[in-house]
Image (cartoon, rainbow, N blue to C red):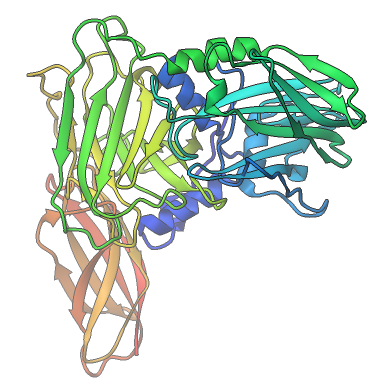
Length: 529
């Protein structure tokens, strides 16, 4: 499935600030060709090697235990863009994302919220986040999901700090509840929530208590019952789900074969950030083992001094895969960017962008795992998805999302080599000119005016020539010294406005890198009050 979404040229972006840029990108990827989700299921499979039957979206919205909240919206109320995008990218032809409804919302102490969304199909059936029943021919569908300790953390093999959800759907009329029977002879019943037409089906979500996780007490069947206790349909696949899913997840992870791949830790000064997220460390863990060189994951964990809000835009890592700052994006030559992007629905999601010219395009969460803690955000992705050979190194830069972001390192990139003693390939002559964007500015006569511009240069060192005009008359030429250029933030130069200068001026900015390559001119307006 093609999930690519084009990002407008940088000149159309708001004034260079990364936070605004992220908001702009988020608006782009929530359009007609948004990105796919399902991170909770994907992470579980990546972490434990399990096939847990469905790709589920773990969005913040649901609740459980003693009550089920009926939250489906009125027919004319559109679902959030995140939900529509999910069904567009994961549903079959004929699904109607704009008419999706939130059937159940469960609030679980210590976990967060758990929702079940359903979308109708033009064929008369419906799609849930665990599967579709296009022609309503299946009387009862059941799925199971194993999640981490909360809605924002993935499950960890060998840990019992998990949540297990059993979910299901039935189109049968007269269905009132679901009976869950266990190996020890006990049973429980949970109600069905029925959505009206065009969905016209019943749904349930049940959190399996921990005392029913172990052999001898596990569920053996689920049955749909009518209000007068008549069994309408039965499903026994839960036995296999428990054996192949939960039992393997609870088992301790196998010992790695051979020596583990080298790890690396890169630090960044504490207290150097003007944003709420002060990046202090970037850890790289190459998840390969001796027997899994071609398919191993590479993981990046960003540690910050402040608290991580997983409902908002969070830190990102950008990767220079060929270790050449003269190719790829202007962000030090990075070819991919993995960012934590706020969904607008109460939770952020990881998004993978690929370089396109100076910036990035596309946006997909497919294949990217992630985790979040009080002070950390982690991303994981297969080397094969990045096109990296087993022993290939890369360059890394991490950044926060703010009007004045913190980056690690402050200028340039960290170099990671999985094979000790290996050096990145030598660089040739820098032949790529920088790019600059000037932004409209304001000033006051007789005082210093701030002229803002955004400089993009792969190798990160430039000087600028700034010319200020009144009509065709040149008022001032300013040359800045050769200095570091941070592509994640806006640069400014101060100009002392003469006392007798008022009105609308214009200024131009040209950037020249250390190798002498010259950018095109960028022009903007300076209004002097």
